[in-house]
Image (cartoon, rainbow, N blue to C red):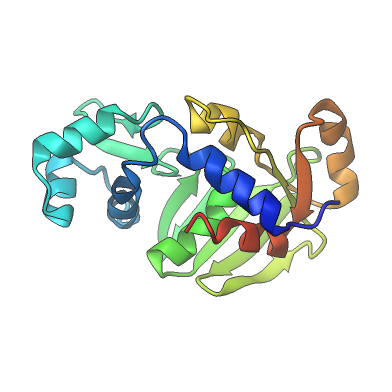
Length: 202
């Protein structure tokens, strides 16, 4: 197991922020997360009201994001935090939500300034992984030896495809060994280290 360190955090931050459109549109994530956390689809008009930006500017920013999930009416239903079920259940203030990857569950409570109850599963064994994540850190981790995988793709066009789909919980370092053998570009870190690794992205 690899311990998180500043170089890895810097590489991750650079990799994700240089993905298509994300660097110039960081405000979009900051606006969307609290709206999605209410548990309902978010329109461009909702984002414009929340940010004071013109609706046209919001639409242009959304069009630059390759991974935004929308419904039949064009409303946003997912952008890291999602209303559509994934492997990572993320409950905030009693509202059932989901995230695209394990690191999202460690990052979003600080962005939302709300604790979250997280329920996921080991990517290798399907054993349950449960934790509470607050803006200050991780508590109630079960099993306590759980780890999270991390990759640092180079300026991906799709953050979800190149990063999120490789960032999983594992019940233990040993459970991650077969997956790591197939993904030599990845490392695993303790969940608490994953939390610290995520904070520069916040």
